[in-house]
Image (tube, rainbow, N blue to C red; front, side, top):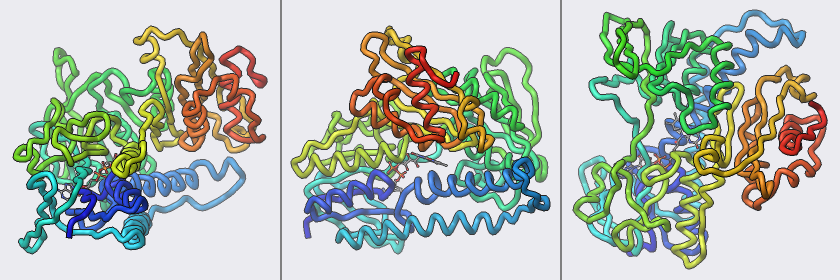
Length: 467
Ligand code: FAD
């Protein structure tokens, strides 16, 4: 049997591409080496981390916030196995959903490791050692990414863990070092801090959340510090000594001039980023080119250097985000069926799911300055928002960046409870090329946190009402 499309990898990029292609009438197969579909995101990424973030947030609220609202409860006790059970049930529900959607859309799923033999031919190696060859008109590489490692630091997933191990610890570490102040490190560090760990974040750069708006990152770091997270910026992990059940980390200044210091920890989380995963795909033999960062090179329409072979998601350039991978999957499926699929890379929201959340879409102030774009800033704090006061969630602000000449919104950055939901009105506005005036004149329900978005838009023209 010849398929129209074979997708290798069923993460958010691959499974969404397969479903959209099937909706458009293609005969589709997927190849997945993991026991369950859903990739990093559903199995060891977005979904389990959000389950843990939610439950740890409830735990902290019950311990520290309830009393202030007049709710008296005994000191909450942690039942970590039950918390992990909830996490696992959340994963199971989600990956089961993909299985159902594949059946519903008549997508054939091959379990095994895919290797491209040539354009039109994918070999599937099954766990029992047997292989089969699947023929297809088009191949999509959607093999995602893997944890980036530090040279000389061995990850055992028990004491020295990657995000995968950090999602499955069997007890709360007394002391935890998080190496890397990116999204994953800060999210998982927050989880374990809320559950009782003393968390120190070690970051090579002189700031947290590289790539996000600098002002937002600075303010957010202050909030995390207030919550008890410690930071060692401009520092690097040089080595780890194991002393029985304890770890001793040697931390050096990033510049490497001053003396190193040692810190004890029970668990060290290495969260320095992710790298594109192309191992075992046979790309060299087929002639699929990679870029200098090991990502599959594409032509802007997801085509690789070989006709009939395409790539999407974390394995190609761009932000390593599930929704970016999904949108690329949809765009590619539509292109392959003769439609004009498209991804607007200027409007891809990014969210840090901590408490408060950080959400951002479009340009940062640093990017606008570098491009020489004249812009206006409108800022509004949640401390002046009625709903935020009612919920005692007054930390943070909304910042709208608009083109000084045209008033077109170029970027929106939010730190605050629910920022990850609020950011989407900015994304929709920006998709339609809207202005700060459009946003400021859009009626927002009262009382909502989202009114701060409207007020920040009005602040671009110096006319917020409640400040
Ligand atoms: P993946 O999800 O990595 O899927 C690739 C799949 O390909 C895997 O299932 C793999 O087994 C399979 N595969 C690889 N090689 C082969 C082969 N040769 N044959 C067969 N199968 C193969 N992103 C967000 O947007 N929001 C979040 O909140 C978020 N949280 C995260 C939290 C953590 C802890 C981590 C680690 C990541 C998080 N991410 C988040 C990132 C997100 O998970 C990725 O951007 C997303 O999963 C990328 O999707 P993908 O389809 O490109 O690849």
